[in-house]
Image (tube, rainbow, N blue to C red):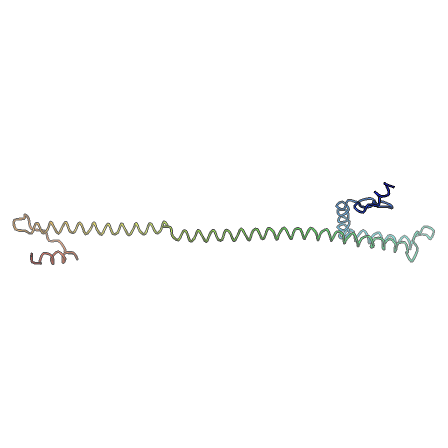
Length: 204
């Protein structure tokens, strides 16, 4: 009685009854179906199939009557071709489904990689833009060269002006009474007018 109650428990699945079918490896069967479908989709299969049917027709038409195993109307050949078609169609569909599953997985992987590449590209674009903004505030080599060249020109001009001032002072000292030898006749430049104006001012 206790065993019967245990067998009638609803929280446990009932053991299957009847004939147990053998379990097939789905992956192995799928590879086998793909191999058959791949072989049937070649030109060599069509050639071999044509040769077999041609030999079948020739033997059952030209051979002696007692040796013909499938006389006209070739009923046995029709049965064989029907069985081949009935098994070939599901095998081809199974191979197509497996190929579709692989294509879907490959498509998802490609989409994931494309998303990652897009994110990386956007990140690099932002980094390059930030670098360009930062580089806009940094002195470049050409800028330093131009500034140094301008500074060198200003120093040269200042040295020339200082040299001219010293020369004018020497000329003024030489032009004073009892100041030595008279100044040499040299060409005047634009600064001579300034010195002449200063010299001509009355002393306060």
